[in-house]
Length: 237
Image (cartoon, rainbow, N blue to C red; front, side, top):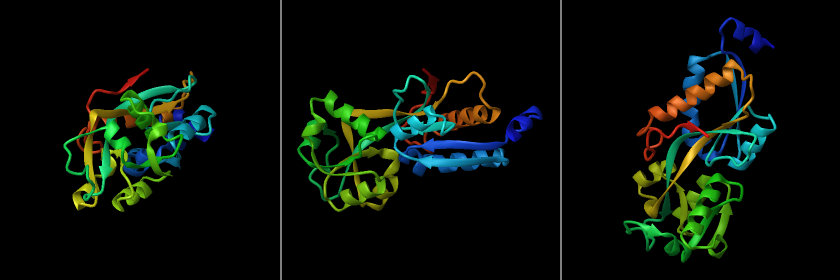
C-alpha cells in the first residue's frame, strides 16, 4: 500500500523480490543492483539465488517479482525478455591434454572425465542440448561428479579431475592467473541470458523501472560485464 501511494507522487519505492541463477547473481547482478539502488534509494531489493528452473517457478507463483536466468523459460505463463548473449567454453587444467587446442568438439569432450552442473541448471540444459545437437548422448558422458556451485566446479577442474563447460565470463580471473585454460567449443556455443516476469496487466512502477533498467544495462555493457555477448539481443517473445 505504501508503494502504491508513493507511485501517486511519482516515487519508485517499496520491496522488490528478485530471483537470479547463480552465474548472474555472482558475476553480473551485484553491480547492476548497486547502480539501481543508487538511483532509487527507497527500494528494498531482496535477492533469492537458485537454479534457473527454481527461479522461473517462483516468479510464476508470485513468490518473486522478476527473475534473471540462464536460458529462456518454458513456462507459458511468463514473459521472457532476452537480455544478452553469453558464450560457453570448455575449461580444463593447464596440464590437460586438450589445453593447447584452438578448439574442441563435443565428441572429444565426451571422451574425457567430465564435471557437470546439477539437473535444473540453465547451464546444464544448454550444454545437454549442445551435446545432443552434435551427436553425443549426455547420458554417455563420463561424469565424475555433479556440482551445484561454479566455484566447486572450477576447483575440481583446477585439480585436474575432469573438464567442464562454463560461461566464459565466470573464469576470467582464473585464466589471468593461469590456473585454468578456456578452449572454445566447435561449433561455438552461446546462450541468451533472460529476464522473466508475469505478464500482468497492471505492473508496479517499481517493477517497470527495474525491468527497463536491467535491460538497458545489459545492452550498454557489451565488453564490460559480458565480454563475449553481442549487442542488440534484447527482445520480448
